[in-house]
Amino acid sequence: DALPILSGFLPSPAFKGPKMTQRPVPQDSRVPMVDLVRFLSVVLIISYHYFCSSISLTGYPPLEGKAIVRLFPNSYYGVTFFFVVSGFIISGILMGSKEPLSKIDLKSFYIRRAARLFPLLALSIAVGLFCVVAFSPPIDSKMSCCFKKLGFHFTPGFWLSLGTFQFNWFLLRENPAAPPAFHWRILWTLAIEEQFYFFYPFLIRSLGERTKILRCLLGIIVLGMVFREWAHLQFPGNVFWGYNASFSNFDQIAIGCVAYLTLEGLRAKAPLKPWIPAMFLWTGLLTTASVYLFTSPILSDRVWQPTVISLGCALVLLGGSLSPFLNGSFFSFLAWPGRLGYGCYIWQALGMFILWDVLVRVGHLRALGLYVGGVFLIALASYYFFERPANRWIRGRFRLPPSATL
Image 1: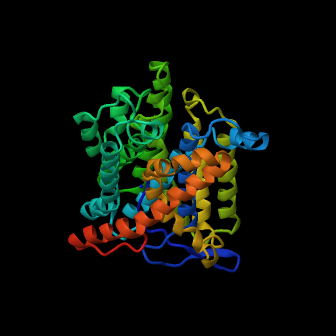
Image 2: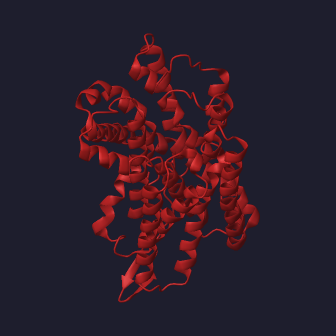
Image 3: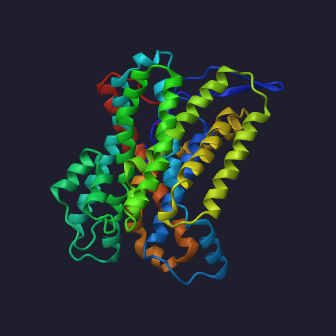
């Protein structure tokens, strides 16, 4: 949902003695590690946008300042993690059923996708438009940051790009250095996801074999690095072609898809030795931390980094999905924050707009904690009072069973 929205068929292995075996679980089961990574990725994205705002840019105590410099310059990688999780989950939805891949139910997939994505997207557009009309003029600093920048015009092309999921190309075509306000700007990630998921189910049906699908996905991964290198050479003064363009990000979604195919292959060869999930998990954590903490935050330097950190994230998902310990009932509580990932992503600007004056007074990392908590509460209310009822209504209209994992 920036982001990855639906959970799919990810059966949990059971632990019997020194080896793992599989046991079937309902299709709507959740994997705690997948949802945990999804939620943490949104927290990173929220943090990045907080530090990009003018709420509290200076005056930090030395210890807080060092922590911020170390932890948050690369927090935009939260979008990358979200893309990986999205590919992992959507592949589970498309390939996890018992139907042959050449006969997957496209109609059911697109209805489920639309039921999860469109209601909240439409509500966020309506809320954003209401704020633009109700609180303008005058345009103060919080209004300019959150909903309407001074001088930006909501042209027909802007609305058309939102409705057709071409918004990332709209940003590149218009002026990527002067994008619309925060509430609208974040929708570029949804555009990239939906572009990928428009052709991905058809790709699966047409190829029909996991080996062929895997080869195609590996080609998309290579294309991502090649495209980013080409973009930096072709547009040396415009770093956004290597950041907002669809082909600059498809490799990260494809890595999530490959991770699910790998998970299927490993489960088919069960039983697995118990150290294998731990190896995946720790290798992934070390890879992810190395790229996150020790590479440049400058966008023009990003060529191989998004691909490598995506591989690290994919290994974490693999290890967490295969681990009987992490899939036990003790860790089941880790799954529920993942349900709020889409809402947290969508309502970032609204939370900042509502809490702006308080955040300015509080300042420092305490303000960041308050901001994350505020967005979390808005997403919680949105989930229970709007997203779930709307999802059930749409699925009911098309005679699909309600989702237990929304």
